[in-house]
Length: 386
Image 1 (cartoon, rainbow, N blue to C red):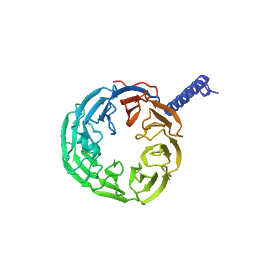
Image 2 (cartoon, one colour):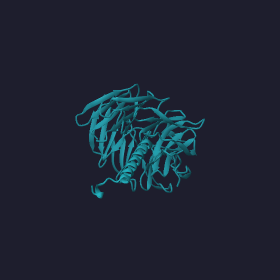
Image 3 (tube, rainbow, N blue to C red):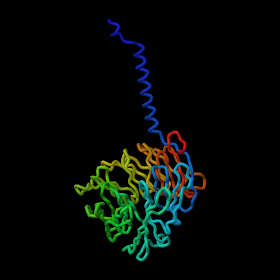
Image 4 (cartoon, rainbow, N blue to C red):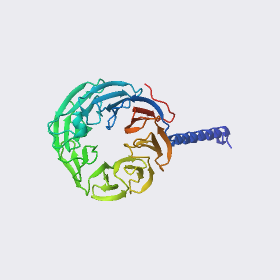
């Protein structure tokens, strides 16, 4: 046999060792990906004036929060230090909406907002605020609502703001100057949180309807009638189905093209949230359970009872979901595969979760009794610095 044809034992051994190392690296990466996130408290911004409105973030580096005294604050996401505050002159009605340069937020009379909502002869003000300085760029005033407004939802679409009042008033507004482009009024209150998908606004009303509007001109493009008002509505990623939940614990997948239900699932209380994950639909309910449901057929994959009513939307970290209950000091870290409790996020003694949470990169920010808390969720622990 020619020397070139003889197997080189050293080379074969080297290939074998490298292959083993590669397999071990892949195994370790898989193990790391599936390992439960470990949390470390990074900072706290002390305040007793947190609202029930969601936080907003700016590329994970800054956090914006509405306060009960009508102030909007900006917090450094790495240190928890306050960057600025802006007094909006009334109770804040919307979560902050952040784009490349500005923050948009709605506020009204603070007493009317808490007790009655915004009514005729009251003024609701929408502001564009510079996110670096907190200085107002422009403001637009709205009056004479047909029904009281207690909450406003803001969405960004191209160069426009979409303003949705929970009373059924909808405006498209020019981001540069606050000018109204178009307006719709349905004279019926919303029954669930609206959402924007592609170039459509979708909302559910107390008149048992699901309505879809074009974001370009407000044109009606969907108008579906259901037996009862819906407490939650989301749309499948392929936009073929609505996932609808009601106040009696019924969840259905509604085929938009065929106008039929593909499946239904019932639990013991009002459906509060539906979250898409790669394992299925995370469904939370006022029966104090969290469920994982197969999106294709509605089959129950697992359920887990919580210590109390779930506070807000679950936060998904890879193969895990994190949920906190009202007035509890511990958030549960559950495996998406089987719902097994694998870790906890624990607050210090005397503190408990109040409401909103937000994922920012590898960290999670919570509203608590003692203020805004940030926890790192990286595999190796440690808080972000800049």
